[in-house]
Amino acid sequence: MKRPAPSFTESQSSKRARIGSPASDGSGEPPGANWPAKKEEIEAARRFILEWSDPKPHSESFARLLILSSAAAKFRTLIVPDKDADGLASGSILQRTLVLLGLSSSLITTHLVQRGKNIHDPSERTAMTKLSPSYVFVLDQGSRRSLPVVDIPNHRSLIIDHHQAAEDEFPIGSQHVTACNSPPISTSALLTYLICHPLHPAIEEQCAWLAVLGTHGDLGTNFKWQPPFPDMGVVLKRYTRKRLNDAVSLINAPRRTAAYNVHTAWEALTEATSPVDMLTNKALLAARAEVNAEVERCTHVPPNFSSDGRVAVLRMNSKAQVHPVIATRWAGHLKSARLEVVMAANEGYLEGHVNFSCRVARCAKERSGGKGEVNIIELLNDIVKTAGDPSLRDRLGESFARGHKEASGGIVPMKEFEEIMALMGVGTGSRKKKDLVIPEKRRENTITNYFLKKVGPQTD
Image (cartoon, rainbow, N blue to C red; front, side, top):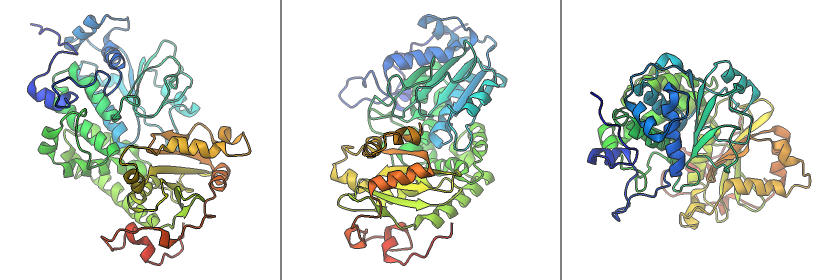
């Protein structure tokens, strides 16, 4: 006998409200209707997910009936998650949801973007097109105005994301749901989870921990789950914050290695029933050890400052993707009266290019009282506007100043990167060691006391 189809907006049980729904702010009022994204985008995304068994448009009520349908799946589906913990967790949540809804796993294919590429590159579009999907889900990849995701007539594509993007910065013909305009900005994993949560009663049990893993991967291991974010206390108590955070570091490790073995992380995550399953995975542990060693090798590179003291630049040469880690670490420790942004630039990751990551310095956040006044994307674009050569912005390409306001970066040709350094006046200012404030605690051999030790030349 069929159960009545649940409503997307009906009240949840007390347990489900704790784990699966945006939390109340304590006022007795429901959370904002447009969090974690616009309500109409979320509802449309749910209808999209439920369309796999019939390509014809559905009314919302009919789409709900598909939740309990046992009809055989008929359409090839492609999932394209980003390579980090947030992106991979998003993909795993969606994959599990589709299987729970009855889509045969044999019709679900995953495409992992190659090193230094993005979904808009011709080679990636070709690779995805060869898989002949009818439905394509792109998760946590960022977005831009571009050709359709795949070169297949009548395919359907859904973009689930949280990176900064204007309303028209999405592939032609795609549907999207984005958290970037609904502060506090959710991660892609949490957004995907909250979209999928009402679609099947088993999603909470199978996917809540993945939502936490992805969120801690992007927002930090000490992230506090406060409204409007849902209360994930049950998940944190069941698995412990330490185990979840260990799983984050393990999932992030393979994509940072010189081999860029993202498949190892994806396979480990999709096969896991809990974060505990990943803690003894030998391939993940080996990847993390390799990355940790390379981070330590590159961490002590000396910073140079822009002429106005707002940006600290650390340059390194590594085949591993260690620059985001180093930017984050230095941003948490380096202090200066005018410092706003820490940039870690890696000349060895892609031949002929510089991959760089920028993070807002903690001292800048403290000066602003946590109001988020520093916008890295705007800062980078403002620097380029000072160039006498108007062609610079075009030469930097579409991968410049992408991401988030507080965590941006890019991939640019070496020559153009040097032009940016010249515009910033890096190394020409009067910033000296005495201008920097070094924390009093932890005087061990770490980046916090870099300036207390003599640094030998790098041999990259």
